[in-house]
Length: 164
Image (cartoon, rainbow, N blue to C red; front, side):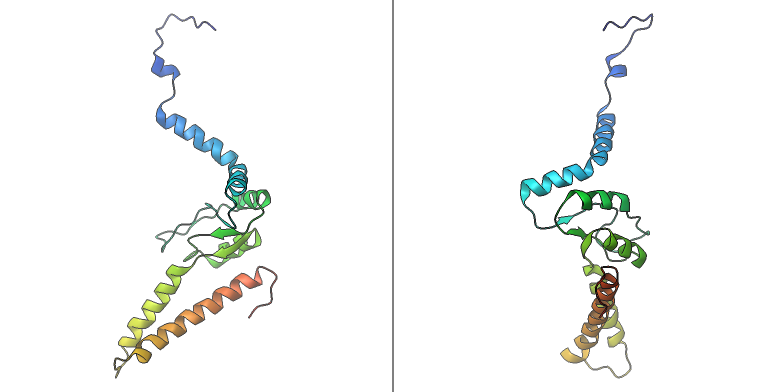
């Protein structure tokens, strides 16, 4: 094809910038993300897949927004359990929705560390507290148990399992 114009056309006008190419590739990848996931599972033989649907590790400074539509597409495309990284601090209703749509493992270590740490500090500040291993760690351990029980009930209720 011959382009005729009275104006000079620079190559840079016709060639997308690296940023534009990256944006187009990313948009295409998102469009076919579930196919990439299926190909990855088939090629690697992984026994579970951590999905990128809007969460991150650690505590949030904002409320995460989960891409449930993407999760549904991935869940339909793969035959392995799906993992939600960064479940700590993700609102319960979002976790419920994610579990309803294929998430089978939720990583919440940061919430455990936080519960343990808060109870540890509270225990040290009790009037008459005396340092001992059981006196210091037992209440923190109980806080971890309570959190685990609450999370297991949250996940089980949304997975048609009987609550604890």
